Length: 405
Ligand code: AMP
Image (tube, rainbow, N blue to C red):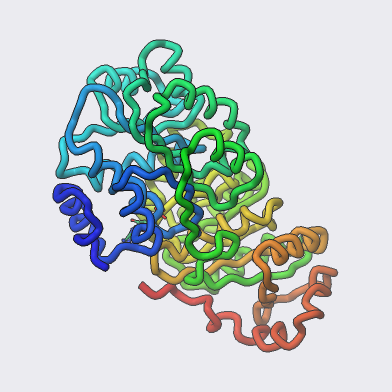
């Protein structure tokens, strides 16, 4: 079915055309008609499935034209995600006269206060700064008709649920509410019962599994060969842009310096950097000026940078769901992506937890002509010996080349 048949407002359809989309993605196909009817919705979808447009397009259609009071509020966990959702609303709504503003902490108040004073239709916010602005009397939510809780599981992880509840208390009871979350743990289920009215549930794909467009494998290695293996991988792959994840901020800074010394154009993104630094890093990466971004999990959810051909996990993520989110940063929409995860002996339990979470074994690979020293991380390959041997000689060619566009 084409976008034109979904019942979206003509000016919003113009925005969709300008964005270059021809066909709706599965979650858009399912969610848009329900949301246009005004239904509440709980959506779980894999990363990169077009979730933002699934809620933004019907919302813009329903708001129709500018009014002085905010009528849509989108809450999300991180500044980066909020900024990205704001951009999406602006893009899709560019042929309407609707106004959008983004509200998050770590930056001055002036611009946000100014925009709110001028009157906006859509506020995209992280919870802390929004509460702050509400308490200062700068933001009012008593005209909100549409409320979106984006990446709800992440807001839970970050301890935002009490703030989210306080914000919800400021919104009218009669409203449309949608909640998106990759997984629905019991706390989110409770929130759904409390905040949503008889929601329709839309699950696209299996939220636990990585997108099918991403080819991913594990690279067992001894602890003190990790840097050497990382550099060797970067030398051998033919990448557009690479996102490297580390477990700690310190680790991110260290790899950043290491790769800069090697002559790469590289940026770093983690929560100890100032907001201005984070924005500069992200902008450089988005524009393709920076070829490698080193980040902690702050960057693993929702971020959408089209040029990412490879994700490298320098450390195995602690939470299995972060594995799915991290590697979902590549292979966005329908492009093919590659992800590799360095594994040391002490991380084998985490690997097992990830494999349990996604419901299957992840292929182990070794790269050719690399002077491996023995590590017990290799032992985990025993169970899938035939595969390991087969791919052992096929590293560069098997799914690790430049992504197809
Ligand atoms: P999201 O899951 O919202 O982060 O979106 C992932 C990517 O898919 C973004 O780059 C969107 O611009 C893109 N996208 C969303 N909807 C469509 C569509 N119908 N056709 C093509 N690309 C889309």
